[in-house]
Image (cartoon, chains in turn purple, green):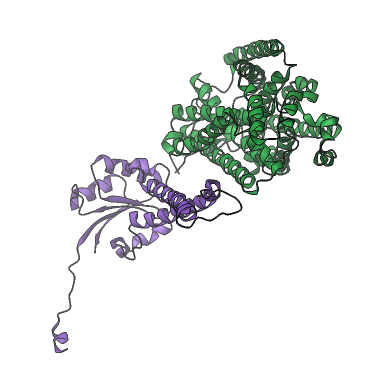
Length: 188
Length: 433
């Protein structure tokens, strides 16, 4: 108990997170995204208040694997029922329902359909959370005052300092050259 | 906002021009020659035109479905105030205006009416109290009145929507578009109900003792899909011939492919719902439908439909990359168009010989279920003879040729795209996320 008074308050040294550049129109943002991709940057992202057509192509984002996760969930659901229902009805506890065969496949299809949908949706929601690393309550960009406008009319590009091509001065100059209205260092 | 300006570049060709004449003459020649050959083969079989009539009905139904499907697409476009589909709407409008030729083409069906529909036989109907009860609906005068009503609405709606759209090419009028949107509501419902009743009248009444509340909906699921299998094919073919090359983009194909996929799955949903209800209840007046379609060779066709219309395209057409690839999309359109035809074939043709005198006596004299099945099996083979299949193919090419010729004739009389539609720019700039 007495040692509690001796603990030094830990003050975290602010780390350089990266650069935040503000843009004023969509086309400049798209052109900047193309230029950054061609310049070889890897750890960067665009932030806009609304979806921008052609941004995936401009940033070179590859299609998500989320559809495959959904397919796996759906097929998993379907085959679970197609295996479980005959296992119970035909082998473990054979029972006659309304004169149908023990293994009455058509009767199992609605369940398989329902569990296929359930599996697909559960996997797609959880897959989305995992892939997008949600829930995330804090992000270094939240420290920037101007970043608050990202939900209204602000369009931004943020480049992380851990990017191999990153250099504080050259990257900042590049962003200004690409039409950024303002470039700001973000410390976390 | 965006600097990208969409231009109706002078490079794009909006008129059928030189393609019109060969399509019309080719379609007419192929149609008349094939129909003549089908009539010749029909006479040569010496079965009193029975196979010819059913082959003709199958082919006629396919193009009836495609035309109604196009009309449903146009009406849906206006009802939902869609903008993505503007660039392909004129093609659908032209395909939807084929009901007058289709009405003329019913002449052979009217001549063979007594042969096609067993419920027109007094003795047959009065052998079964259930059928006697149905005569208040299933009688020739009321059938004809219903058909006249169907065709009056289908012809009226298709001509109205196309003529307004063509007139808009001149004035670009927005009130015209609003008027069409207003009329599309009741028109959409009218076509939906008409096609449901048409399914009951033209397909389900071929087996008048059979009863299924799902069959009209099953017929309608084919109506919903057909246009999405035909439109991409037409558009791809036109683009290969240098028409509309700038206007119809991958994005439009992607959307058409999504609808094609969705309706193909809807077909499976309704088809399975019908099968499962009948399987579960196991009532004789309902199971006759599937009895005929699970004996002998028809079992193979039933399984082929399950896989070809559902399971294989379910995986084959699922990916967006497939829908965005013209060649692959064209393959799946052809595939599903073939299975749409096979679906109609499967609904219509097993009964060609069942309701004949020979078929009825064969069934009546066999009270033992196994010999009954043997007798049925002998009858249901007949529509799959090479000769019968040749008549099927000739009827298909025949009615198809005339249908293509009339569609080309309509397309030649206007631009291939609603060139002054108020929402055209939005459609040209379409982009999927």
